[in-house]
Structures are given as structure tokens and as C-alpha cells.
Length: 166
Image (cartoon, rainbow, N blue to C red; front, side):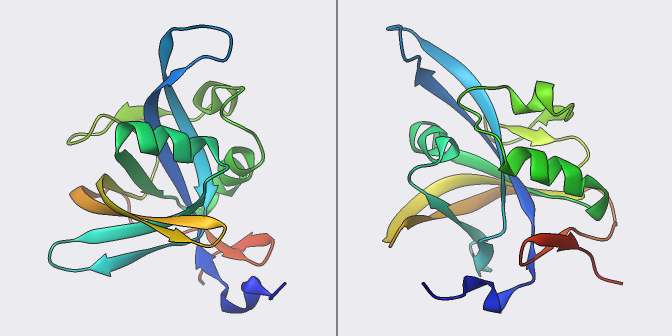
């Protein structure tokens, strides 16, 4: 396996998603909000403003995005590094990460999805394309709304640790 950390540091985000998912032992669908920490993401076009995320097909958030066709990219300040660790180390299929992680949410303005109340900035995205990229899927979203909320130092992932710029 190649050392993919060679290209770090990366800005860490918390991806928020919402979808209507069938429960395992029921025929009913339930609306579920979820959070996922990730560092593989990037802008891919200025006009139109497009943003891409790279996500494993095994992730619960991937299934929510496939169902809803939306996601929110929450750029987090360094002070939220512990929330990133929490979101990246638990499966949203089994818990409510907002509730158990004591993470405040609010509704997105242009898409049916939650976003982080304490994010430094948010991109509200509507899925327009998906590309198979090995063990991940590259999902491209059209940015429907971009909000800069706070001017704070961002959280960066440096290999397996978190840092920020000076």
C-alpha cells in the first residue's frame, strides 16, 4: 500500500448528511441525520462552483447521500478537533452523533440537510455526478449556498494528528 499521507496536511471537515433510510428490522423508512469527519475533499470548478468529496461506499453517510442527493461540507475551526475525532470514530448507523457528541445543528438554507451551527464555513451541495475511484466514490456537488460564518484557524489533519496553521 502506498503512503497516502505523503500529501498531508489536509483540511479536516465534518460532512453532514440526511436521508430516509429503511430500518433493519422494519419496513418503515426513518429520516436520519449523520456526521462524518473527512479530509479528502476539494473544489473542482469555479463556474459553476462545484465541490467534490471522496467517500468509501462502505460508509453510512454514502448511503444517505445516495438517497438524498445532498450533503453539507462543514469547515471546522481547530477548536472542534475533538468533535472531528468523535465523528470519525463512531458509526452513525447506530447512534445519533449530534446528540451523543453534543454537536449543535441548524438547517441548511438551500438543501434538505443539517449543518453545524459552530462551523467556520459551510458549503451546501446538490449532487450532480459520481465517479468510481477505486475503493472510494468521488461525489461532485453543485454548491447551492456558501456561507462564511467565522474567521477562525481551521483544523488540519497531519497524518493521524490534528493541527492548525500558525
